[in-house]
Length: 385
Image: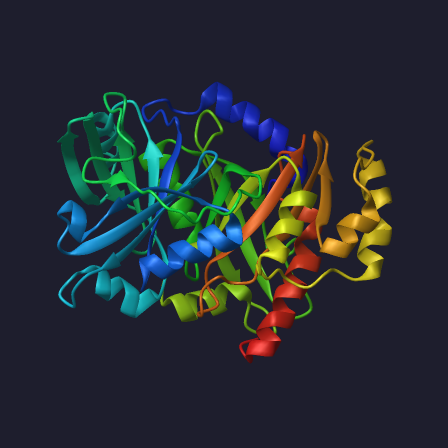
């Protein structure tokens, strides 16, 4: 098993040896299927500081669905709702509730990305399609990944419009200020019992990703529950997908709870990066975003020694971090600051992570126990532990 100390070695392997048949330029957008896109858009603007960007609906000629596009720096969210009972989107909503349907990846050549992945065993979701308007053209294609989640490849080098053909610029008089969220750091998928290695191999074989970090149930456990996780990354390190599966424990783990309520595999959380987590979290809390409970006093007392072991010194005031419930972890490269919201849906499924990296490349392994104990307290409140 690789542990947190292997991150640097793993990344070196990625940069030197990962296959380059699927070059990815970054995350293009993340699309949620939601029950009411208009109201969901208001929530993400008000609570998270996203800005109005683009719109597609009846007014633009879309008869079966409506989509609101929101942006904050490099993060682009698309919120989509069906407009009639016959839409296939309804099946997704009935089964899963609000959640992530599409993880769109920015590529130079969407047709080639489709051919490379489907020839390696990917199930087709969307054959390459050229979409045009007066601003140019976008080529998109897509494949299924775990559960009903899909990756859409987006080629937009010949497009100058606001978002995609079929959308218009979304003008709004209501624009709360951004809170300082910059880009998507990673996105975590939950899969079923015994399925983690299946999807690790899928990302290796189909998309040329590398497994550069692994955690087993000996590392990720509490008194009651456990899970296993492997982190997948593409060749340039811009796209990182940790994959979790449940492990046997005395009680029901957070992964089991997710799988039960989402009714299958799907995106568990989206980690968004910031350059100033103290300001971002302070603003998010003032806007009503709910976070998991603060770790105990003993956790923060141990932080200086944990950083000292890696020869790092905390630049932030630890009392300020404690007052906000922000956690700290370190590796050989530096340290990171992170905090997790409570689920943002009625079902205990999708949530967000706010992360600030101060050189560290890991995922907060030293915080796992405190984090999962906090999640278990929420599960106990819900009666699902």
